[in-house]
Image (cartoon, rainbow, N blue to C red):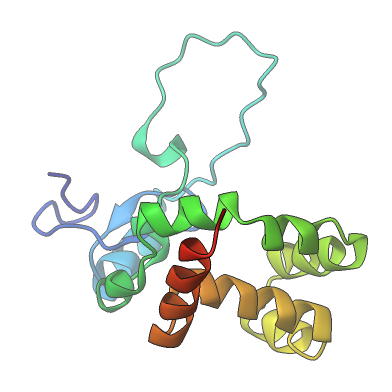
Length: 154
């Protein structure tokens, strides 16, 4: 189990966006910022053959880094993520260059909430989001319909 990089007492829920040290609370974040130990992590050069060990601050972001304790229940199970990846309907939608540009715009936006709100004005993005939700949270009628389809196969 990992402990807060500032107080070393509690399990960290957050990561500093600059140096990526893990911390457990706002007060620890403020202490971290005030003690001048925060040094932004440089992007590693894949071409360099450095044998320097990778610190926890340099490790890739994880789902836990991005979610707070209350949003942990909103994680999508791995099986559902696999179903998203296997969906021919989603693959078909993602062949559309306009949708791909919209998704890249949302992904690269600083204000993701606003970017998603703006993207939801586009019918193609709404269709994509609806298709994702059908896979992640199918309704009972969709499950019944899907089961009926399986029975009709020859």
